[in-house]
Image 1 (cartoon, rainbow, N blue to C red):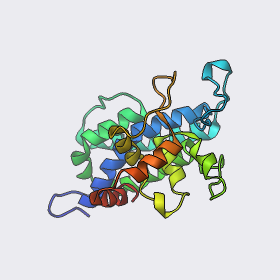
Image 2: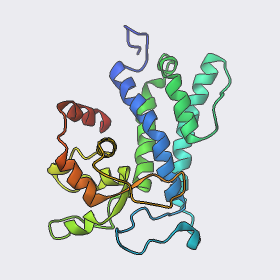
Image 3: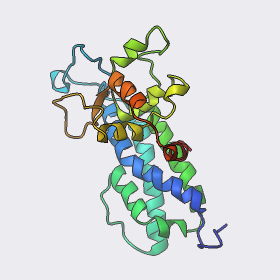
Image 4: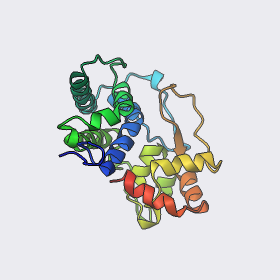
Length: 230
């Protein structure tokens, strides 16, 4: 059924959520590429850090399957859009490329019959990829006795957001976007490399936790977090 006001098959609130998902996919694809080679992004601050050039890393079947599924889901919706509009796909054949193409053509996409299921399918594929790229923190089971162990971890923004969900209500607004806000405010600095250019920036968890408490959260951030986590 279309949205009567805009002749869309995707309601406005769903379209807004889908737009956010598509914007998140390029960074998720980078995280998944690292997981694909089982590159450990959870090194401890102050511990022995092994560079990826020092030894070969095994291939992850689970990450490959998750990456392929996400790519195929996006590719299927791109194909439907092209067929419906009698046009050729003109973007790169990569997961980020597919997501960016859909993002550019989202208004047209929303007017195609059958696309009302798109957000659910894309989000499900993203959830499966996120479970591989940022698995539940089996590295550290956070409690009051081991908080210092958590503070010493090196994680990227997505990993910190995943970890924060297990730290209790005090940290429920420590999302991936919140980490970027703290960085823009100059309250946290990345762990120095050298890193591969495509690797996501890593941060010391303890510094992020301290900065999160230091910088007040604006009221509108709470509403945005609910939309992001929907």
